[in-house]
Amino acid sequence: MRSPRPLESILVTSHTPGASVELRSVSKSYASETAPSVVNLSLQVAPGEICTFVGPSGCGKTTTLRMVNRLVEPTSGQVLVDGQDIATGDPTVLRRRIGYVIQQTGLFPHQTIAENVATVPHLLGWDKRRVASRVDELLQLVGLDPDHVRRRYPSQLSGGERQRVGVARAVAAEPPLMLMDEPFGAVDPIVRERLQDEFLALHAKLGMTVLFVTHDVDEALKMGNRVAVMQQGGHLAQFATPAEILSAPANDFVAQFVGADRALKHLALLTVRAADIEPPDGASYEGLPRLTRDTNLRDALSALLTANAPCGVVVDSDGRTLGTLSLAALQAALDRSTADSVRAARAAQ
Image 1 (spheres, rainbow, N blue to C red):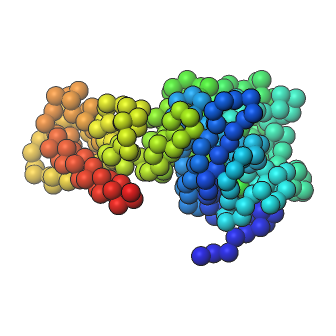
Image 2 (spheres, rainbow, N blue to C red; image 1 turned 90 degrees about the vertical axis):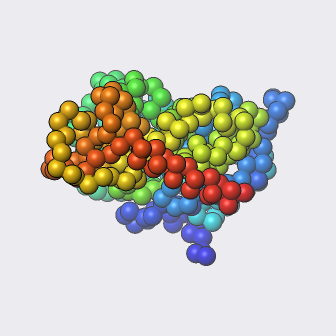
Image 3 (cartoon, rainbow, N blue to C red; image 1 turned 180 degrees about the horizontal axis):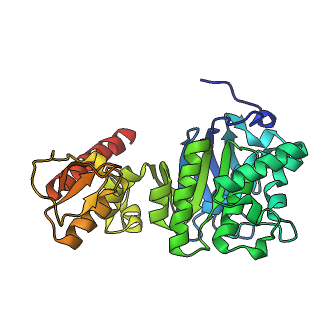
């Protein structure tokens, strides 16, 4: 077991691996409320994972997130980052080492985009040249043209652009841990899906650990390596992989919350790579829907049903035919994944 890093030393070098996060019997109560906000919450998030928190309003998701950067202090229990109890360090130092993104971005309206992105690097004492280089690098990384936006103000950007700037600001000092509270909830569905995909690509490059709060179960399942389903009263109903939650919900609340279309949601977690593809047989594939190995199986099913086709033709990036995917093969891939997920869920009990 690796020795814990002091909080002050987190992220002193570029591309530091994500931090581990552990909550040990964490509870939070307020004197003004009759019921606690969070009750005896324990879970562990491995370095580099995205853990999504999902549940109805008032279930303690945001309170849990804020206890990790000490915007809210736990009533009892411990929060550990990389094995270090965060209660033992300076909360200001801790927050400078944690990226934080909220629904409305929280950008400073009187500062330019460049100044917003540079907030934490300036606080950490980076020199001007390093800050300027990092600002331009990150704006490009989140899909914005630095020459076009760096001197603009938040009010001059669209909602989706402001959200990108919020993400850039959060990762500016390359934090090993990011907290995201409904980060894409204020934009339209098309922009939201694009932002989700862009963030997943960004995460794959940077490898930070992410705690991600959402009220949308589809977003939680798409974004998370692990999902914490919270229920009213601040209780953890289930903590598992998306596939395990869909295949083996822990109780009736989880089953109802993720919805009756669990099988379709599960298909969205799988791609054509998970299915058995029939090799080409020389037949004509004219009129069959075209799929790639990265097409998720829900989209593949939709394409087959829309075309009223018995199978789809799978092609590579150059358009070469790899074979065909039938409805039976699609069903078999789902069955295998479901069986694996149920076994994993039972083993974890």
